[in-house]
Image (cartoon, rainbow, N blue to C red; front, side):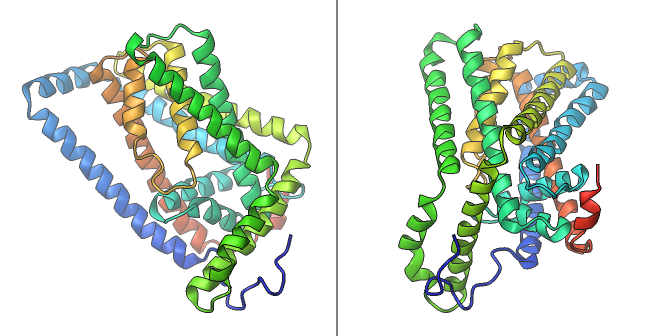
Length: 365
């Protein structure tokens, strides 16, 4: 649904630009440094207490570095599967290499933390177009649809485990955890509705933001560009929906592989510290926290409360004691920071690499 001449803005810039990526790179590295420093200071502060020093010494004595490395490797592999999930929903004729898509996914993660709004999604789509010739609207639509598949598989897993498994959740928290599962399911259903029937939303956005887009200047141009992108993305979502069940099944399979890779990594981290976790509870913990984070993916810093939720569920549904749960949660957070550093390196490569390798991409893999 292209914008009418009256709705188009003469000064509308591109919705994403290299300058935004460079700004995100600087801010993202600053966030990594700040969070890493805060984690280090927190561990040092805990080590100053007798109980904390004893717990840390016990964890270090039990820790098995080879298993920790395997855990980090398994969790990193999930980002390769996320790239393949995205590719499964791209239009026919566009087959970017898996490693390149993994780099773009990591770069998008960094941009989501560093820039306001859903710039990680838009930036990833822009780089997929610049590097591999995927049309921006198609790349953005397939990326959003891939996120939906990730949400659906995680939410379904959480609901299934909650229904059939006997989790070691304390009785006083059963209603709270059950309510969270219901909320995650409703959030997933809302996103599914928006993705399945996206046509009304660009019209609503133009009604609300049209006056801003009509103004000349930087703000008006940026709003107009975003509205135009929303129009094109809506058309792209409609096209993604017409690809047939095979594309969606392939995306669901890659999504399941991604989830399994992270759960395996978390289980290996538990084993590395000699911790015994309830397998169903571990799966429920990951699926619940992942589904909750994906519901809020359009917000920057969407995982502000992720660590606390993950830590609480490791204790409440997987049966880990506080010290072991904290060690596993810290391992996952350190890995997340490492992926953000990988995203920064990917951004440097994407900004310097030659554009438009579409011909090579079609013959890759």
